[in-house]
Image (cartoon, rainbow, N blue to C red; front, side):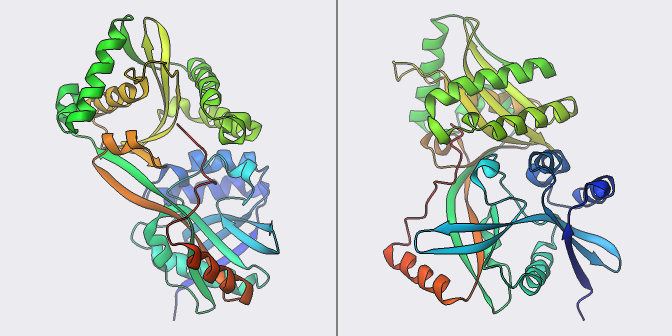
Length: 372
């Protein structure tokens, strides 16, 4: 007999302290993704005005799994579906904050069994829901055992890049020696050309006020690069979320905003998260030059990698989104996906067949916030 039991209910704000306490206990046992940490989730709950639902998994009255979910009706040409999104809303204006490494929070090593029992419960309790959607997550999510009434379908995918930090990378030349000859040449040439303009320095925000100011400046550059809805800085919910995230968590050390300055003028900002020694690069704001030999973004990342290596961090993760600069600076790559566990309903089966017939290689990235 399965000893796991699942409950779902509307989130009650009055229970938030209890929920936070249980969540934090589970965090200590989990795979420790920043995007399932209470630092991130607590701000997300405020952004959605606590209008969501709570999933709790018990084992002998002990909490072993938690997540939130929202139900969203997706209207598309010729059809509509009822979707259930885990730790997301299904609405672009809210989800543009773009959480990655998303999952049900549970003890490390128990993800598959707890995910399975959650899917089984949701399938039974919400018969009107057509799709149960989880991501952005590692590719293994799609292999989660599920009911015969469901079939997993990858509805979005991208590459993710990271580099393992070694103590010797504290010397920039040691890190550059691991890169291709062409990448090494581009970085060194760019540093030389930038130094001809003035002192080149990498500075981090030392106070909450400075962090908020640097984020605002990064946003101005980001909007110049990514127009309209492609930039989260044109979305007030996105801006409010990150201001709240920084205000709540800057003092804990998990927020790190870096500025690459040339002759005292910022040429690039990097907005990063640090969680258990793991560095997540979230977005950048870059002042692009007419001379394409000047690559402040590439230089900023190289200097940041060297900085974090010297501080004993373990990994620099560029996260999702294809980019040549990411591939040129990384040592590892993997695939990230969003998986929809869909009911075997005729319309969804037909759509799956049509999409697969068109091409297996045309998975859309249009949900991705362009982080630069």
